[in-house]
Length: 328
Length: 245
Image (cartoon, rainbow over all chains, first blue to last red; front, side, top):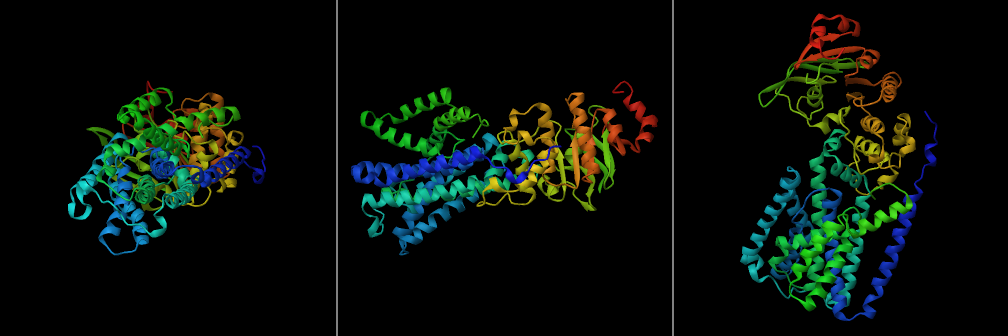
């Protein structure tokens, strides 16, 4: 038996990583803060859309990448968040702030109800149930004319005076995105986050060391739903309108592809995927209306050549050069 | 500490456990032996809640735990290792044990403390006593088979159990690695005062470490007692004839 001094233990590689990550994040934020000065309104709008989508994708990855759960219909909670804002502002006389606060809570509540059923199933069955229950919510939104305006959606949603210019919307979405990401990051590094990885790796063993795996997964599902609801708020700020297509499954599929593209094992991965897909769909849209065809081809290439995602691949190279452990 | 009475369990008409009885006194090392397919692993899975019994009773520290969820049984002070490697494959060696320690302290639903800084000493102490200290930052999938088996037990120890169940702790190991496990079991029993229940094929190991032995044959307990009594028991000899030595 060796006698090591336990107090001296530090992980220098981990420290370096943290500083590097913080540095990149700081530079990124400064660039983004200055961006509206140099860009046309259209690109500012586009970036705000990227922020919205990035938050949605990152929240999905908590369940998908960290929890290892095949969550196929995350867009529902995004749509529920957006619709909550739209309905509260157009059908009640409550202040806008109440609508904004309610949105993530309602999304989390719906996530709790859907998740409560889904965590009882495993693998593909989990995925099919998220899809089925999600489409059920879509059908309700699509049909409930009195509340949701059905197929037409809700347009010209009133927002406070200070959020009418695209630049102020840009800064608001950036601020909310950054705060949300910090909270999500802290969660992934918390005991809860570590145990979430453990339940992904080995649910049977997790249960054996005293973790209520179903409850753990449900908690992750509800947190992800909450942040998708926040993304829904951002969507309303940017677009000022909602339509039932927000809750349709193909929207969720696109978000899933964003996560795959960026890399499920890296925190920033889904954000990168979101950025690439949103910008790409804009560029492709200039030349052809067959965006989905391009998306399909991209997915094919991704699965064949970069199954770990772009950022996952880069991290692998970085880790090899640092001679550290395999995965993160 | 642990009492199993008239336990029964069948799978699709096959009676895996037909009448299992077991008594594990506090502080002792008890071994369950029996030919292949006798139901040893099934018995373990019943005790730890991974399977639900058809009938019978399991009592732990005087309280009924029959068909309770595994995580609740763990909270009561029972931990186990598995026959096949059953670890958290993407985590480091350190995190594997730390996850278990975190769950033991019921902090697995804590969102805002950095996990990296939690229970470092407690985790390293376990790794150290298992000879895994030098591998702590490695991905656990990079460990040798023998070290993974040891890590298997280390994870169980992270739960700070009073009763430790070891399901074939030396399965597939070299004689040198087996030695290491034997020393480990003796250390845990004598110095840490753990009560240990194990199944094992290696009879030499069983008679070396066990203070009591229970023999399971076709899902039935056919004998239970001190090692020397088991060695001389006629029904045990019959059950093993043509099987192991």
